[in-house]
Every structure is written in C-alpha cells, then in structure tokens.
Length: 80
Image 1 (cartoon, rainbow, N blue to C red):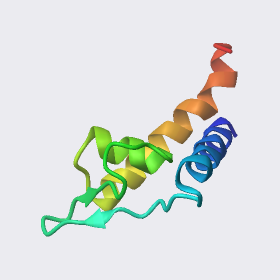
Image 2 (tube, one colour):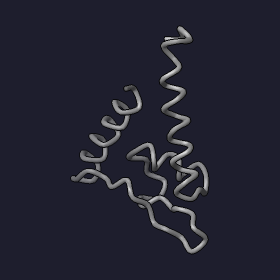
Image 3 (cartoon, rainbow, N blue to C red):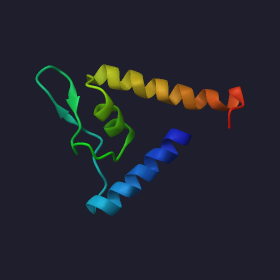
Image 4 (cartoon, one colour):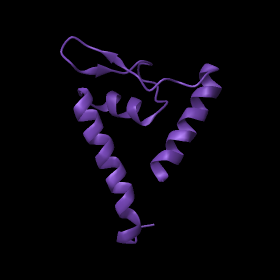
C-alpha cells in the first residue's frame, strides 16, 4: 500500500508544480530504453527509476515488482 501512497503524493506534487498531473509515460528511444519525459524532475516511481537507470519496459516492470515486493515484506520483517 505504501508505494501507492507515495505515488499519490508525487502525483499531487506534480499537480502543484505543473498545473496538471504528470504522465507516467516516458519517451521511447531507438535502442528500446525509455527516457524520462520530464528530465530530472521526479513526479512518479517511473520517473525515479528511469532517472536512475537506462532500462527498457520489461526491466522497468521488473524493478517496480521488486519495489512492491520490498514494501510487502516490511510488515513480516517487523522493520516499521
């Protein structure tokens, strides 16, 4: 649930900064990687991932699944 809450906060932030909600879609490059649409600005999880690494769509989905898995394991590990 936490990634969705953080995504909502980032989307609300984009609404304040841009005057509209930022799109999660990136710019597809010729080599198959996805470049962030808003440069170094981070308005969603996808923007964060695409700013950190040059990934294609399948790799981005895999990273997002790992992020969700990590947040899902936190209650079982008793970290928070």
